[in-house]
Image 1 (cartoon, rainbow, N blue to C red):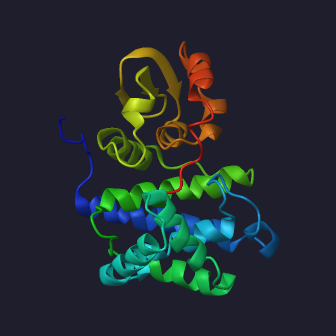
Image 2 (cartoon, rainbow, N blue to C red):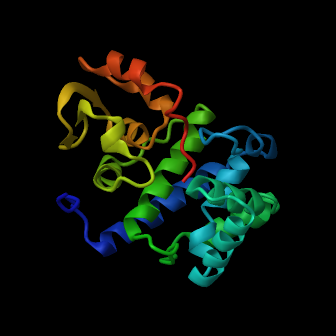
Image 3 (cartoon, rainbow, N blue to C red):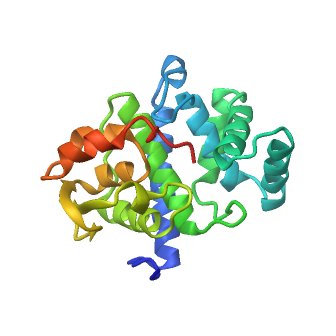
Length: 229
């Protein structure tokens, strides 16, 4: 498999992560307590939980996060999703204002979870912003160039979304920046919608066009639930 076709330098990626985190803080900081209790696109997670999730890697040392993952493993959460779900729900017990303070402190952080890269942080920030915004009916489109960089990571690396396997037989074409991947029936959408599609969010299906859009909607199926990571 060839290396991802990235366009940004590492410093560019981190600057884009900081901008995406700032957008998320502005989004959730403007919501009332009732909206924090509403469901997000992530199955089983409230807006409150998504916000807590985005504080984990940037505000924790690698050792602390590794201990948390090991603790989740010992408690029987053997899958990646299960371990991350446990850590996120625990973090989600913190008060709203405490989480907001942590999110603000995390904007410029370059801390990473064990085994991850700056591109993973970018995927997290962009996709989870959509998990909240789309669920609440608020339009906060991702910058197309940033979304393309994140999409390239998701496409190139199978874990945890398995995008190339799930979307085999379709050619994905971005409508707002130069980017296409895959072979088969064409599916066209904004880079934001394609990023949601690649990460398994069914909400993306309403924003697809092209010969393959209807077939993809049928094939997406119940197994393609909203992803946790």
